[in-house]
Image (tube, rainbow, N blue to C red; front, side, top):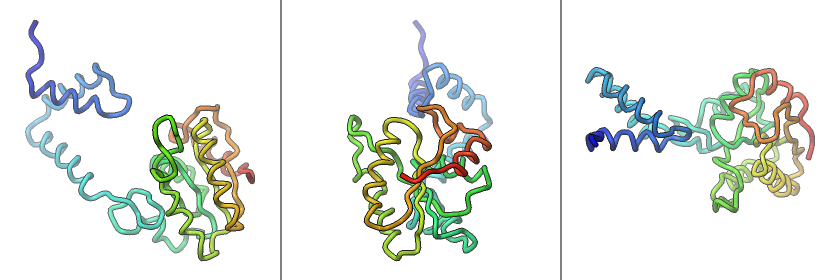
Length: 199
């Protein structure tokens, strides 16, 4: 039976590495690339390489940034007394879309998940604690997803934060258990921020 050429098979396998992309979707994407002009295909590959080379992490909040300090941390209009802790950069974007939260962020880059070998050392926890030393922060909002891992991470962080005498709150979710922030609509996120509770 005739199969794909080695180059096409390799391209399909690369697309399959993306989260949520199955074999059929990867094949469709690969054929879409083949149908691009040489110029568009080159621009596509340069965009991928450029993103990998230029995007790093903010040295303060660990969010993605093309500069040493991200735009949010560098903005003097942001309220530095409140830090919202999230799992990933996608959650920062979701909350920013609400246009209601004006504090700072901290990105953990994951959740505690012992079954997958993810412990505190794999997350940006030390960086969070180092931000609390100067006494400027008055509240930390833990905005992890309402999953088992999200709740475990929230409880772990709340215990770590106790000695810092900061108010520690958790979003009051209008989300179903197991839901994810990045898929929530603006109103749901607005209500969750408004109804956050101390933990």
